[in-house]
Length: 509
Image (cartoon, rainbow, N blue to C red; front, side, top):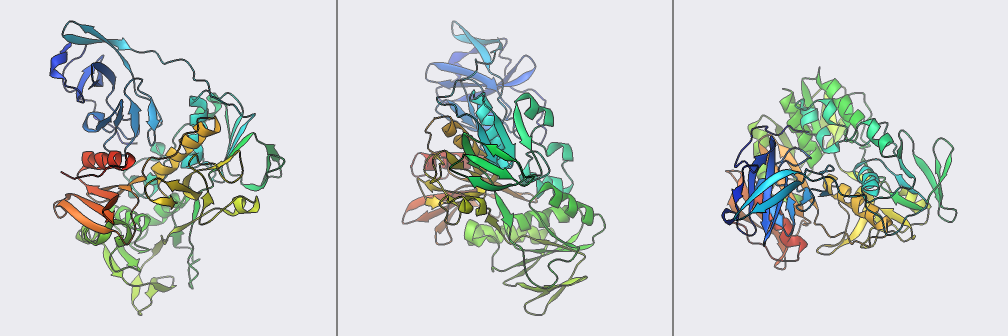
């Protein structure tokens, strides 16, 4: 994770602060006991919590207060102002909560609040088994314990590693700007302390719905009281000649990213096939390593279906300004040892090829078990499948979004949040999943925040200065706001998220 600044700013709340100077709905950054503190006012109530997001160190004081929560401006994590609890991913750790004492017209911070007692779930299945140890599965396992569940929790992952920070694999880690110790979300001892039985390098080969048990690839059978499917997605593989050559790579796992990094140490030229977010982030990361990069994309404008023509062109121009060459409207016909040949006969010299042409949800296990699927595993508002007691979350889940209808998305934060919601519902919460989808994407100095779910047929409008990288693009259909993509307007993107979540319209600044 990124490191936050340690320089303390604002008033010293140990020495007190005039209550009249903090209006209803305002947040104030200050410090106490050598740490940055956020004080917020809602009506006559004052709250004081740690001011630094526990995900990547984002400044919560520059975020958005919604009711009694604060939303981080960087990646939209949410914290409860009353307790400091991390209530929505991508932050998994709480922030400190402080004791606040009023003395006349002033308030003082007098110390930290001890953590509240353990929660008690409404229901407790005999055991919970989670298939998939990615974003959704890992977040679900943690939330079960946070909600006070004390029964057996088993987390089974096909990956050889425990849950890790997948977005970083195509961003700073691949670019060489983030060390590998930032990649694991938790150390191994965390799972032992939380009594989460984490089984890696193992797949579930079958589900016996009637018996309530699964079969593992090592031949074992495990029973379950409740089951969460979080099997994720796998990259689409090209079938053109040469697609299996040694210098051809895909990027999905930590091992994949390590392999690309190893090959990048000697590579001079790379071809990225696919102008997707993953493909373009790989292009940026390889340019950071001083490798010549050519991008091959089927569409005439990269990311047009997601970001619209204007922002798609800005992404292309940003890459071109940093030396990336584009071959758009083209597809590869063959990969050779020293070049990629395109469908128009063009030959692109390279010694490294990275393919990013999309992913497919891993629904085979659900299908074999008789669980309803249709471009994903079908779930209801509570992320429960057609089989009672079996839930699904993450890249495989196709859920009834209250704004866009039934959708399936492949975003890290969405997967984590669905894992958290599914865990709470396994324990009887009956909490519908209603948070709008959100993702972020980095391209050199261009940082995109996207909230909502648009389509290729949406009408787009630009507010602000795209060339100046300070703008929002609004996506509408029949005058209904579907999504907002922002550059340099982090707070505005948070406000758009809040508007979408509450079914309200949104007007950019």
